[in-house]
Image 1 (cartoon, rainbow, N blue to C red):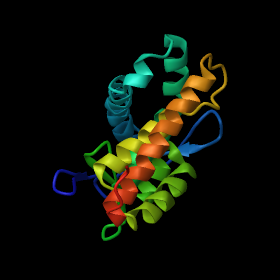
Image 2: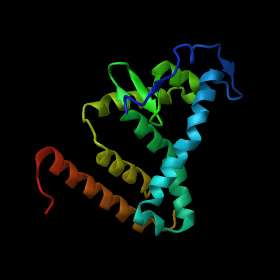
Image 3: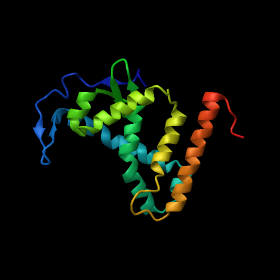
Length: 179
């Protein structure tokens, strides 16, 4: 992923800040760059969810609630696992490398600090694609979302993904078979 990324120009995120109705200040140029990648990123989350057999068995109402609840979490995880300590950047949507201030000024505010801190922490684990996918499935199948119909079924799905994650880590890191 490091070879494919493009760095957001240094001057983006440094422009004069515009005041938003809620009082926050945002660099409109950086915000514009981030909005270009948000829709495809959300589409990738939805596509990922649709590939999970247990997800597609849930009622449509639950699918919508789960997707609304996890999109930002999964996009944050995906960015965090693409943290590069050398350049101190996160790679958004697999393509755009950004610095902390650019993300903060582009509309994420203090959330950007949490995502960067998560990235620094996760970089020590060298997670592979399977581990990230299982973590995404765990985030998706969160049974504590308000308004869910099939809470127990979703909880069991999440437990299944957590167990798979545990088995995979034990095998990958410690060569412990799962049987």
